[in-house]
Image 1 (cartoon, rainbow, N blue to C red):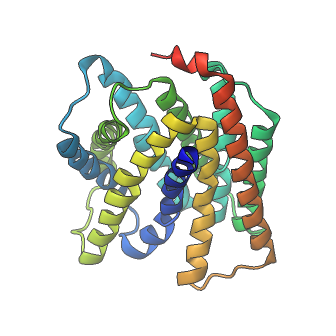
Image 2 (cartoon, helix red, strand yellow):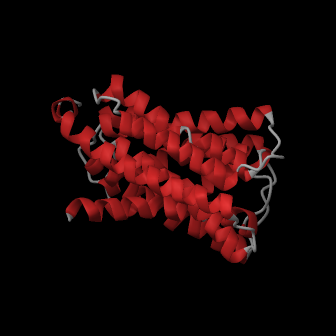
Amino acid sequence: MARSGDIVLTASAPVIWGSTYIVTTQFLPDGFPLMVGALRALPAGLLLLVVVHRLPPRELVGRIFLLGALNFAIFWAALFVAAYRLPGGVAATLGAIQPLIVLLLSRPMLGTRVKPAGLLAAVAGMVGVGLLLLAPQARLDPVGVAAALVGALSMAAGTVLTRKWEMPASALTVTAWQLTAGGLLLLPVALVMEPGFPMPSAINLAGLLWLGLIGAALTYFFWFRGIARLGPAAVTSLGFLSPLTAVLLGWLFLGQALGPVQLIGAATVLVSVWLGQRSGLRAMVSAPSALAATP
């Protein structure tokens, strides 16, 4: 029962992240991906720092900034660049390679074996996302494709390292540290590369509050908690729920079509999540000593 609760809480993170697409396009100014990422991360991180009232130990600062770069600064910058330069379906399909990268990185970094069920879940998830979103006439922009792949690699490495470098602090505290570090890294780059960010309107503020407080502070607390309790393999398979949610929200609120192919894709995504949970549980059982030895 405890594992089921952990899965539900962790799964709520990518489900909420699925709203990022509709919130970004309907509530935020266009053309400022880096600044939006910085405003999403830094205020949420500082707010959580006030709540937890704890700064990271000096010996962990380097790791915190590296994780903040991988999980937030690099990932969000690449994500928004890909979203602006590629159709949503192409960006999401390329990003769906992340669970496969996590499986491949977990072997040398965590000592977990790559199981056939895990590989099958990763491939099935990629196929499902492709059926959900990838249109035959989708165009491929080289910079956008590179950004999507860099984002997937960055988040995958951050997920594995978050598990490897288990911090002597609660998941909420670790979330505060990483969000703040990611925002501090992203803000100066955004100020230099994206001058002229407009004064936010009430609608813009509502979108930023949703992406920052709910879509960052709360959801990443659930995400990092899930990595610690369920393991990277099980957690990353839940990420396929994000594009599935985005499609459903587009269908409900934007009148976007949802045909038989998309329904098959949705079913395939759900099957991949189920397979990923089974594989992740076996990986947790098979490598407890390797995880216990990590600093």
